[in-house]
Length: 394
Image (cartoon, rainbow, N blue to C red; front, side, top):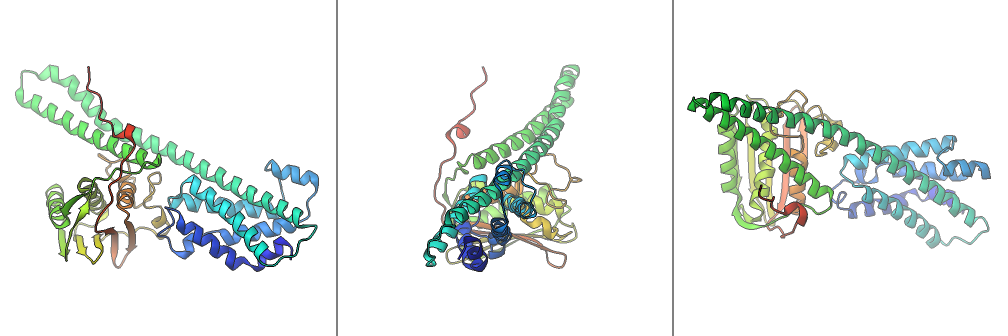
């Protein structure tokens, strides 16, 4: 059987192999079957049809330069582009996406060989065409992935510049006013408080950037687990949130054993981000609930709020640091202490504890973020350069 026909007639086992490999990646281990399989059937179908289409030497040369006009090639490019966009939205990095193609190539050839295929003089041509099509698909996916990352990074830098400008302006104006009001102690104290608050805002933004950089460099977030009671931390966070947002009713529910070994500061950061998100997007008349539930091997943390649901098409993008959804990071909302990475950082905190986070959102039931954590986290180090203490000013 020719390789193109083999691919079309053995689509299911090939796709199953793709799914197994995708699930073995860090970004794919908790995804469902539909998301793992993604556009692989479209890519395989377009690849097989491209392999079966006639091709001259001149056309092969054009294809190698990305100039092939055939319908089959356009179909393959379209599926490859869609695959790159989806993998980016699901948090796959470039190497994970590229490794899928390597596994797909090896899987197809292995299945073909193990099928009892009898060698034929056309096998070399079939393998050549197959590799050309896979290379074309990979090239298109990488180009699409890179383009969207570059676009998102430019937008991210624009947002960062805008958000840092406000506290910096407050610091500058207060510093200019101080010499003029040195005789009035009350006004001096007020200006100093403004400078301190604005500096704190900038510090939180810088910390978010450091956390983002740690994860993007592949070092991961450093984790220093200590024995702690999640119920005590939950009570502290709810109390703080009530003081900061008296217009909202915030409730704490605890069940079972909530003792464990986690990084206290990181878990505080994750829950605080979810509570802040609930306050920002929830309706004041509907209570915000923090539920903590101890189970046999771990704990479950849930933050629920009412309000406008997250659009279904944005649920897969909700944890992306470089995408602002209409609900996840509302352009109209105040952004005085955030650069839109709260949910991304929360996800990375959960991952650093070998847990998982999920979100559901409907008009009837509201929005719920659910974190599943094992009972004990494993200590891990971050990037030594990023963890270094800043030098003292001279």
